[in-house]
Length: 196
Figure 1 (cartoon, rainbow, N blue to C red):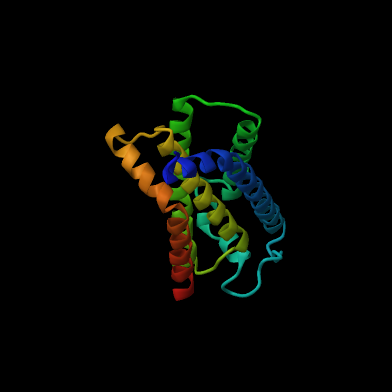
Figure 2 (cartoon, one colour; figure 1 turned 120 degrees about the vertical axis):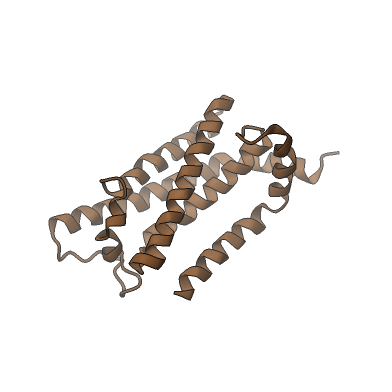
C-alpha cells in the first residue's frame, strides 16, 4: 500500500512539468513587460510606466535604480532567458523527456543562484529603493515557487549536491510540509513589505 510520501512524490512528478511551464510563461510575460518599459524609459526619461501607482508601487523608481542593472545590463533580460529555459524544460518534461542526474544538479545550482538573486532584489527594493514593482513581485513569487518544487523533486529523485545520507529524511520532511513552507515564505515576505 502506497504511503503518504510516495503519493506526494507521485503527485509532484506529475505536477512539476506544469509548474515549470506555467511559471516560465508567467515569468517571460512579466520580464517582457518590464523590458519594454525599461526601453521606453531609456528613450524618454519622462515616460511613466503603467505600474507607477504611487511612490511605493513604482516601477519607474525601481527601473531607474542601479540595482536594476546588477550585471551591467537590464535585469529583465536575465528573466527572459531564465524563464524561457524553465518553460522549455517544463514543455520537454510534458513531452516525455528525461534528463540525467548532472542536468538536475545543474538546474539545482542555477535555481539556487536565481533564488539568491531574487532575495537580494527583494531586500534592495524594500529596504534601499523603498519602492516595489508589481511585475517584479510576480517574478519573485514564480521564482520562489519553481525553486521550491524543483528542490523537492530533486530530493525525491536524489538528484542533489547534499550528502546522500541527508537526502531521504530532508526530502520526506519537505514533501510532508511543502505547501505550509511555501505559504509561510509568502507570508513572511508580505510581512516584511508591509512593515516598511
